[in-house]
Length: 209
Figure 1 (tube, helix red, strand yellow):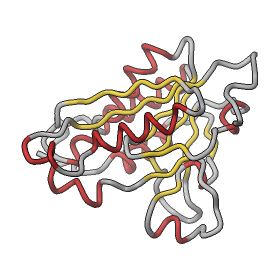
Figure 2 (figure 1 turned 45 degrees about the horizontal axis):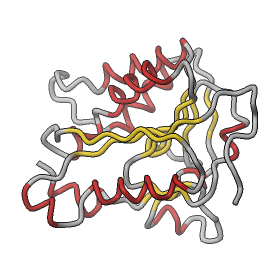
Figure 3 (figure 1 turned 90 degrees about the horizontal axis):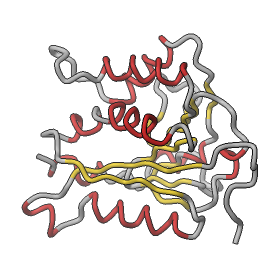
Figure 4 (figure 1 turned 180 degrees about the vertical axis):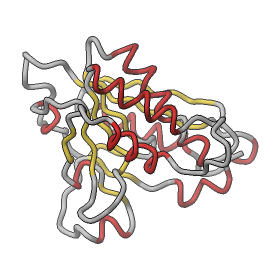
């Protein structure tokens, strides 16, 4: 088995994720908790640290995704002095050890498809730097539920926050670190994913309350 952290001069990696607690009929059906349990199992073989939380739903799938920068901020404050962080959506599954991240030295990394306007927010690598916190501060403000009439989703606001943080060092992760079920994976039919996203929201977002 290919193993673990290889660079002793760099912080180890901690994976972080959250999901909305299933309620009522959700508990008896396919739900995010089941995907989160699958995520945890997929990490066991690589001996990577994991912090995963179940949160009370914010009332809709979109509102739950807009909680993402607040969650990431909390985790960076809690763990950032000792770990580099890798946020993944709770429906993610690790198929290979993320070796590239052991060698990465940058504030922020995520995948952005060629000619696509938005950064993919399902896999996000972060280091504990001033620039990262400035980026998160901007992202938090853009996702503030008090913003009147704002219905943007987390990827749009993340992309805007990244553009607004001029000092931020950014690395575009290769697609195998954020390969999504459906049309995205059809773009890369021969790719062996490192992190695979099951796109549970396509089935579940209408059931979330």
